[in-house]
Picture 1 (cartoon, one colour):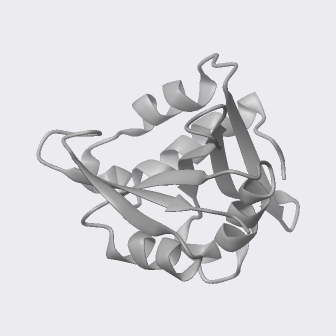
Picture 2 (cartoon, one colour):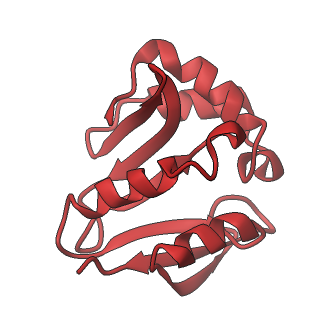
Length: 144
């Protein structure tokens, strides 16, 4: 895990705009690039590398509700199922002894199953949080 480099924001934003949940939620590459580039001292944007190139992205907000909040976790399709997502979540869980939080789009069955496999529990449904007409599910992990 290392900090996201400014030159990586545009290419990563392009890749994210083409996959779920951002595709269905209507987030284009320009909006995602602004998110990745904006100054926010409470948000760490990190990448995990594979073969020397960014292969996954983690945006971790802290402090949050007695533990960090995974604001964005993304692994492009070619890296899914390889353990990269799990490695990023495990790294995030090790940053704090309290809670680890995330939100997942209710329609994103693959992401919901991913978080469930890692021990997260669904704690609340948040209608229209990210985009009108779409529910987000707040999930929580209590690291041991």
